[in-house]
Amino acid sequence: MKYSDKQREIFQGKKIAIVGLGVEGLASAEFLKQFQPTLAFFDQKEASELDAENVNKAQSLGKVVTGQDAFAHVLGFDLILRSPGIKKEEEFLVKAQEKGAVVTSQTKLFFDFCPCYIIGVTGTKGKGTTATLIHKMLQESGRDTYLGGNIGVPPFSFLDKLTESSIVVLELSSFQLADVTKSPHIAVMLMVVPEHLDYHGHEAAYVDAKRNILRFQTQDDIAILNRDYIASNESDIYTQGQIFWVTRERASIDQGCYIKDGAIWMSMRGSEWKIIDTDKIALPGKHNWENASSAALAATLSGADKEAVVKVLQSFTGLPHRIELVREVKGVRYYDDSIATNPESAIAAIESFESPKILILGGVTEGSSFEQLGEIIAKESTIKAIIGIGKEWPTIKAAIEKNKPFEHLLFIEGATTMQQVVQAASKVAESGDVVLLSPACKSFDMFKNYKERGDKFKKE
Image 1 (cartoon, rainbow, N blue to C red):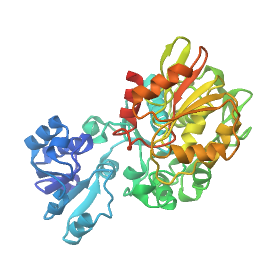
Image 2: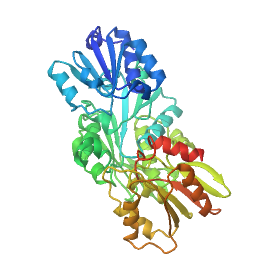
Image 3: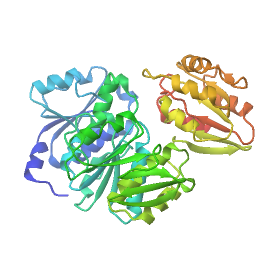
Image 4: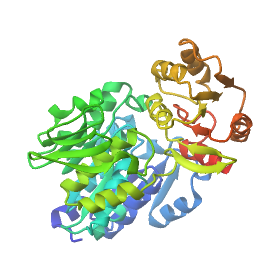
């Protein structure tokens, strides 16, 4: 990819600070080195806590400053690239801006530099699955397509490969959308429910960040919105783009996808046609009908063949830690849904199975309410037992008991390791049962993150 003199001017010979020494920060540095800047990396973790390979790579590219007071030294730079987990309102960034620095992010810069069509996907849950489906559908249709963003692939890692005919699919978190000033050509907004309130402070700020995916669209762009969730449904006023809807609660819709007669249907420009029977979709769970519908819409509007859309929906079984079948042991199926870090996601997972279930619930939360989860569990006769773990388990248990659950429901408490959790589940599970790790909480009281929690479950 060739860059204009104006684009080169942004980086050429500048002093650039990269705040956050992770995969995205290193990808930024690898991209920037062609402009011969002076690079420096800053991370509040101690060097011993960081990935040694990452530290070595960073040291080969520039100065590395680590430790608790590292950010205090982010002054005197022309440009500062913050990682998504660092708020743009942080005091050290505000001070740097006051002294003339430009504070930006990889996502913001990528939107400025990308020469081709961008499909962006956001939502509280389902965005990684939906983005992957879209990418695979376009790939199956023979398009030159790239998948990146929050899914773990920094878009700077493939920016130089892009041409005007490429299509980029980005999974976008609220952190990544917080400071963008451009929106994707196709913006997909899935279910949005409260999350990351420790970062954003309150629900309105979280939803507002999500809406940046729509806010800068033009009349030539397209917005795909989920009609079944309040925050997504009420986001139509934030875009100038043409709106298409996704729903599994309504029998039909003028422009978009919906569920009718056991199938996903698409309606567009006065025509209606069936995409696929829901029982032929490889992804488990009714909530994935929403993701499949959103992906089918975005891919179709981007030129994907109907045959490619159907083939991917029939074959793609999901991403790790998302209602992932780990193994069947003595007729018992064990599912890893560690990505379910809020009650709404756990409810979706519970409703995905009609078989008798043993649930693993608990962890830490950012102010989530467990009232609806408690009510659903209390009324669900197929739930045999719940293994309660972590700080929030007493709150979850109280929400269940408040609704007078079935007498047969067994509470198993006291497990402090994943080995104890899985052993407890295996003792009460019988052939035909499902053991479901869908905790409705974050993992930080017992594990580093949801990935480690899921990996340890799979190992056991």
